[in-house]
Image (cartoon, rainbow, N blue to C red; front, side):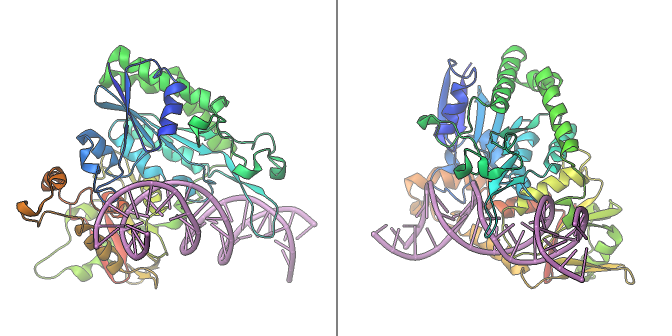
Length: 411
DNA sequence: TTACTTACCGCAAGTGCCAT
DNA sequence: ATGGCACTTGCGGTAAGTAA
């Protein structure tokens, strides 16, 4: 009966421990390292089951019980308009896809003071609630959002009156040792602590496998899901909002015609793409980069494509296009219009990751501190040493299109 | 100590809608 | 027709950590 709290910020770990029944149990804390790309000195020391969750993206907290992860928490203070609320979605997906319940703390609104205008509340894009519900429908594992405490409901039309104007209207815990954590006496946080307690009790009572399966039928989670559904409706949630508005649906035939340029007498496109009649394309007309697109891509998978637990169980192909997609109905094809991103940006990022690879070293050239990392790379190759967005894009997208190159799955 | 990498966090320009 | 406004989309600043 031993708990371990993996954290990136220790004060937040203490905050969660002290406010839940974790307090008083047999617990230990350990720092978590995000990837082999950003922390080559330490990432390999994490246990395998933690690496698996981190494969896509790293949450703020992972709590495990007898070496099994039982829930994760992600906290953000960003104003959640547009695709911002989806920025952290890949890490929620990574958690749930490993059967680990995920908590998401996000402001209902945050005060933004723009040039030449009065402070105002930027409100959360309610589509995030539907995305989380869609994940839960597929995995039967909780993925629940709680509002970061704020003054929004007290001063919804008068952001300037917020007592916490200096903190974007957000309410932080006043205890120094919980620095940066949300106010612990807030109703939303108390509700979240109760849900965490529910998980702990459920798992201690029924074991990890059975305990997890029963969670969504517990009153605490039923009620939370109801609140999330209500918020989606009350805040005017609709599928006509970001990031869905940045997608186009086309007949897969158009995509195959476009990719036929890459076919020759020795190679034909494989069966995976052909197996779905229609294709969703997420258009990103930006310089090739990471956040917030990896999270948005993951969310689109659940919002539009998935009908099962793996990428093979999609109703539609999910394609990421770097540029504007122009549909040509005459020749039943598409073209990509972009002067910002190139396939070279992608391959350069991949090559840069390979520089992290120490597999071409002679044994005698390895420092003692590198041997364990070397051994990890022998097993996993560059799996964990690629940058996050390369990992996430290639995990979720059936294909990635640039105006000067493309990548796709055959199977 | 400095340069560089990675990813987090957050702002604001642009766009299009709606009230007047 | 137009100005205000809210939402969408894209990019910038910076902390944290590593490598040289």
